[in-house]
Length: 326
Image (cartoon, rainbow, N blue to C red):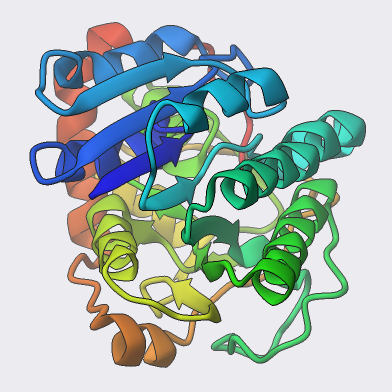
């Protein structure tokens, strides 16, 4: 099988590429931008893959239609896993136009390239953020997604809608996987567990937005990749599936877990809640279990400990300035 992974040098994409190389012909497309963190991190993510047979790295942007035409024309892809996007709720509020340009126009470019070259299947990386504020948990795939509360979330809704349009008009087989707060080795440095670990290891207080009562469904990277791989082997027509851990963790508890793994006393600096943040996320994974055989195996205690172990071995490489997170 020949697979294109967009954003394949990033956190989730590089883990997926690492798992598939050797079994499939893997082409990674990534523009190595410096948005949110140093692109050298992404280059480290894929460096071990560059010498692997059947692996190809293409540096380029999903907004570059001419580049996409060249990539798709080089050989027939069996599937595209479209992960490339700008992430982060708060940065999207500061620059919504950029998010629309990359996440919406870029996704449309991928869909158009697939249509022109007859690529039959798309796995689209969506997000739990599409739901906005929904206190009724766990969240079902059947719930309405027409009230996102950040530009980032709105762009993910738009991506799903365009994917459905191409399924309807052109017969594209599509599965939209809504990820719930993915964490683990290589995650972006602005994300909560990464930032908390870096600050607490330096004996600095953690900026905590709100009173610590917000809850997230944290999902370890290995479990997410298992779900994505299962989606690669199935046909859906059009389907939306949650990939989460189906367990919520309070923000205050997350700080405690990171501190425990580091062996330090937690310190926090309380700040007001930020626009675009939701109070709770939690996935109903029944559909994922039924359609994908999805079975997340990593409780938050184990996942945080594994991340901290990785952080310790990579500490000399993780020198970015800390950013407040929620």
